[in-house]
Every structure is written in C-alpha cells, then in structure tokens.
Image 1 (spheres, helix red, strand yellow):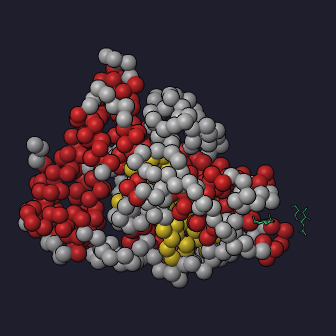
Image 2 (image 1 turned 90 degrees about the vertical axis):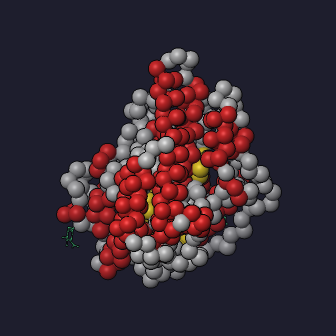
Image 3 (image 1 turned 30 degrees about the vertical axis):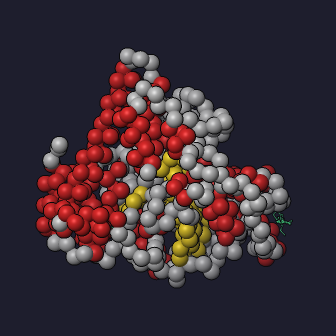
Length: 483
Ligand SMILES: *[C@@H]1O[C@H](CO)[C@@H](O)[C@H](O)[C@H]1NC(C)=O
Ligand SMILES: *[C@@H]1O[C@H](CO)[C@@H](O)[C@H](O)[C@H]1NC(C)=O
Ligand SMILES: *[C@@H]1O[C@H](CO)[C@@H](O)[C@H](O)[C@H]1NC(C)=O
C-alpha cells in the first residue's frame, strides 16, 4: 500500500510531491482513554541497596549503513545513552554501528546524531567497538558467545564475557525480513543461526537471563516457533512474523521536524521503548509494563501503518524490573510510572513510513530540496530512479522465478502464503539460506535491502520441496534479465 503510493507519486507527480506525508499518515490517531492500569510490584524485593547480583551486559547493534538509514544508528546511540545514564560501564556495553552517519557529508549537523526532532546529541561518547566492515555476522555471534577466536580481527575485541549470574540485554535495529536480519556487510543473520548461538550460550551457563529487543520488518519471524521457552531468554519484537516495522520522525512530519534533515530520525518501536526508559525510575518498571506501554504506542490503530509488538521465549521473568538490564538514571528516582507524561502511553502521533520505503522517502526529499540544476539534484535523481528501477527488477525477477519453478498460477500463493502462527517460517533452513543468498547476490539492493521483502516466498518454495539446484539456476537466470 505504502510503496504503491510512493510509486504513484513518483511516477505521476514528480513536480508536486507535497502530499506524501498525508498519504503516509493515513493512520487515525485514537487518543482517548488508553492509559495503562499497571499492577505494581513491590520493589522492596529488589536486591540489597538497589543493586543486582551479577553483572549487566549489553550488545547494541545497527545492522544497516548509508545516510538513508540514519535512524538505525540513531536508535542504537540513544540506547547507549540510556545504559550509560543507567550506570552500566563501557566495559560491559558493546556497540556495533557502521559509523557513517555523524560525519556523513549529508549530515546537516556534523559530528552529531539525534533520535528525535528536538533531541540532543546521542552520538556523544558512544564507544566504537565494531564499526564499518567489522559490523558483521561472525563478530556479532562471537561477541554474544564471548568467544574471541570467532572474531574476524578488527574492532575493540570486547566480548560478552559473562558468568552464570549475569544479565544480558541485546538490542538490534535494522532492516529485516521473514527469517533474517540484515548486516551492513557480509552475510545476514538467519533466525536459525541466531537461535543455535543462543542455545550454545545457554549451555555454557553464562547468563542468568537475557532480554532481546528487535526492531525490523517481520522481526517476529526471528523467534516464532523456534525460540525455546527454557533458555531464560525473553524477546520483544517490533512486528509480528509477517508485517513491516516503521520508521518515524520523518521529513514532512509536524509540528517541528527540523527542516535541514531529509531522512527519518528514529523507528517507532525503538523510540517507544527508549523514550519510556528515558524518564522512568527503572527500579519500578517491569519488562511486562514496558511491553504494554510500547505495544500501545507502536500500534496506531489503523492497521495499515502499524505493527504488533510481540513477545517470545521465557515469560517467567517478565516481572523483573528493567533496572536489572538497563540500570536506571538517578535523575528519574521515584518517578511514578504513568502519572505524568501521558503522551508516552499513547499511540504515537507522528508520521510513520515502512522500513523498506524510508530510503525512497530520503531520496525523494534529497531530490526535492536540492537547488535546481545542482550536482546534488542530479545525484538524488539518479539515486531515486535507480532505486525504483532496481525494485521493479526485483519484483519482476521473483515473479519470473516462481513462474518457472511452480507455474504461473501459483505465483500469488508462493508470494503471499505464510506459515500459521506459532510455526517456524521454514522447515529446511539450509534450502532457505541458499535461495535467499542466491537472490541477494544477483538481485540485491545494498542499502534498502528491498530484495529481502521476498524471503518469505523462498521459505514457501523450500516448504513446497523445491529442487535447490534448479531453483538457484532459475534465480541466477531470472535476475540477469533486464527489461
Ligand atoms: C548502599 O549504597 C550506598 C552508595 O553506594 C552506600 O553508601 C551504602 O553504605 C549502601 N548501603 C548498604 C546497606 O549497603
Ligand atoms: C570458539 O570459536 C572457535 C572458532 O569458531 C571454535 O573453534 C571454538 O570451539 C570456540 N570455543 C568455544 C569455547 O566454544
Ligand atoms: C512505583 O510506582 C508506583 C505507581 O506509579 C508508585 O505508587 C510507587 O510510589 C513507586 N515506587 C517508587 C519506589 O518509586
């Protein structure tokens, strides 16, 4: 729907493009009587003196690169500030970010990253543990496992060197798709591989409990039907297994989007949990309470442009206070949950744009704002047209692949069917990885990752028992045809 709108605009009205935000903003905001009624735990059973047994660890990762993906790294920097204000030490916070935003030639505020329109600089002090090409799959998994020999060499070498009483918080912000999360370079993170590593970490008895927050399209598919409930891992995802997640604080937003920016500054689920964490006494707010707040804030009721925040895994420690994972900012001591700041409990009243279309929005604004005849205008036009034609090529290729392998009549079924809720996306993960990788290799778009939109179709092909050799040959052939 949204991408259709975009195309329409871009093809039909290259000259008068002032309406896109209204279109994106087809969401009806319901602001009435939705304040949460929380059941409060007695915080007195917190460990002595407001400290916890064991250490807290955190891994923060932005899996994208490119200025059009500004928001993912902004989210991750903001998360870092929450943890630092909460009292965690840099030794225990491991940050993965490509780090091409703050000093990007298009950043109107050099050296600064913000995560909301009137936000402060969240880039300050962020440790550069893994940047550039070092933001990769092996490093990420090696860091989780605390296994330095798995690391690929670059970066700070910091890993989660945790013990049996420690708590681990992992936050991932990126593009995703059914069954995988992106990485800015090299291989993507497949759900099955992630779960295997988490099982290994559990076997090694090197944590007490783990909380995993994921912002990405179809992020539920990373855990649905495959995250066991006995690993002491509680996962919260921005979206269920078959829907988009949303960027927010985007150009064209009102009332006060800073006019010098032409890219979205945050993501809806992410800013929801972080703005909630920013102001509360986290010794007095549980994981479950935050889940409820975030779910409410993320799901703008008109479901075209919202997502269902989901929880997976072990539900036994949802009554843990956030403090056990994020610490707490002393400035918020004894801040009563929900008494003030009602706005944080309401669906967000900001424009949202689907993760996959946020790059188009950026290219459009870049084009739109550049002075007539300037080199930037020419460049932005090239990027916009390039992205659109690549998308068209990807759309056509997947249709062609399914036609060849399954026949014309099965195209809609292969494109649209999804496993029933609670079941894993795919039975044969090797088949899935092989086909998705082949498609990425010959049809992929490096920054918008638009091709990943179709990973669900490859899951369906594998579930239907496709011949892998024939399928990869078909993919290569279809992608090589340019109309
Ligand atoms: C609690 O922590 C404070 C500050 O770290 C310390 O001064 C105080 O002695 C501690 N109290 C107890 C009962 O441990
Ligand atoms: C650490 O990783 C290396 C390389 O992948 C592997 O050979 C080794 O067994 C791992 N060590 C542990 C303790 O898992
Ligand atoms: C925790 O929150 C509840 C409800 O908002 C409030 O009544 C209580 O005083 C808070 N406790 C502390 C220690 O801040």
